Length: 157
Image 1 (cartoon, rainbow, N blue to C red):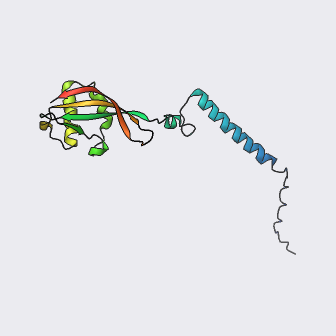
Image 2: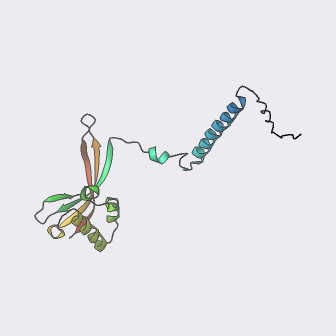
C-alpha cells in the first residue's frame, strides 16, 4: 500500500479582534508625530520644504508698491520709457538694481544692452535714468497711481 502524502492545509492564524485599537494607536502616533515635527520646524525657523513654505506666503500684498524703471531722454528732450524684461523679450530686469552701483563704463554697456533689446537706437538717446516709482492703488478703481519718483542714477550717453 502506498500512502500518498498530501499536504494538509495549515490552520489560519487566529485573528485577534481588538476593535481596531491598534490602527487607532498607529494613527495617533503618526498624527502627533507630524504635528510635533511641524512645531519643531516652526519654532526653530527652519525652511524644510515641504514641511514649511513660510517665505512663499509671507508677503502681504497691499495697495502700495514700488517699481524700478528705465527712462531715456532724447536730444530734443523727449522722454521715452524703455521696456525692460518680459515686455521687451529679455529677462534682465532683475539687473536694474545693479545699475546704480556700476562703474560708468559698465553702466553704459548695461544701458546700451537694454536700449538695443527694446529696439531703441543708443545713438538717439542723450541720457538714461533709472527711477524708483512709488505707487498706490486707488481703493475704488484699483488703478495704479504714482505717488513719487526718485532718480537713482543717470547715465550720460
